[in-house]
Image 1 (cartoon, rainbow, N blue to C red):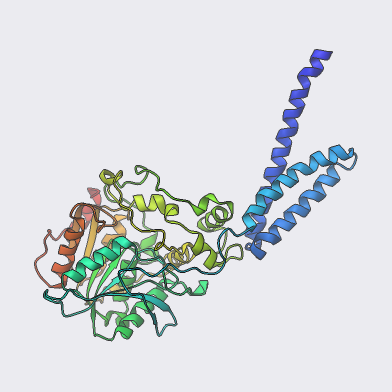
Image 2 (cartoon, helix red, strand yellow):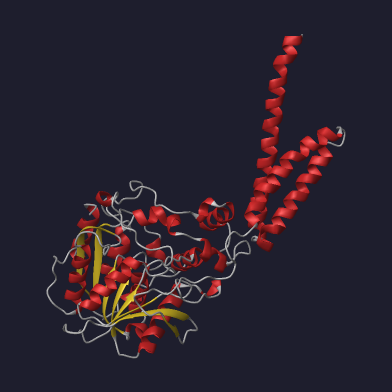
Length: 446
């Protein structure tokens, strides 16, 4: 009898432990459900108080016939769940926006646009003593809603040294630009901001280099006659989907990128902190609105780090470069507005086709496609097939999505392609793919 009792005790203890863990997990799940249901009201406190009260009430009711020790045992899982969920409700970063410090090599200007946006502007005048291009070159960066990386700043300096009067601005809500109310982050707002920026520049039609999501802004701008009137020549580099129908296309990407091959980037990750991991995760899954009460926009921007974008950064490089991916930015310059970026992407998905308008475009344009692009090829070839004013395509070998990345001679090769088009000189690379090449280009998984 003694041996039988001895063997049962560990089983009972294990069963109690499992029940306690299940109760704790159940309360955590209830908390997450309430976060979604309440939109994170009160920085999550509404969900936390409701969960804690429900847990205590249930524990006391279930232990109503037990001794005080039995009641205490029932309350332990509730206490553990309360501690775990409380970490989601306590801000780790400031809830007031902290903007990156000014860069030491370029003056940060702030322009108020007619749209109501106040954006950070950077100007790289052409180097004295070299032939100067007659029109300003405006750079529309990727992201969307992030700072312009130091890698991109170096590339813009290279273009300025070749005689270009380069202007760049960070989209409203990103970098050193002022935040907008969350509802105002739309792809159409980005297009209108570009038009307002060109108006404010007041130097006539400008040449424009749009990269990644900036290329989407540029392509959609070419479909709008008022915005297109500001564009002299357009370089559409590595665009994502330009509208809802295009966004719903799935298909082949470029040659293998460094995603899942590159070492994890160094540095802290906000997504390892429960508050931000839960919030960004629920937003990414579409379970929590971008304008939620759990984490306000400013806190989210302050919290997000470059390491949080590790796999996305790696996907912008070829597999062969997996172990030499350059540091794209510094912690003092990096800024990414994840909620606003997701909101912009959703407005693209929800937008109708712009193909009828883009077919009327007459602005000379060039499409740039990277060999190891992680973008779906049909997102890129849709522009080529739809816009009759695309005069040439340049398939860039040996580079990923971030084509000017400081490795080898990639910056010089990208600059050669861009400047040749802007100066209407022969292309340094074959015009490929052409519209006639698109079916074979897709079928051969180039």
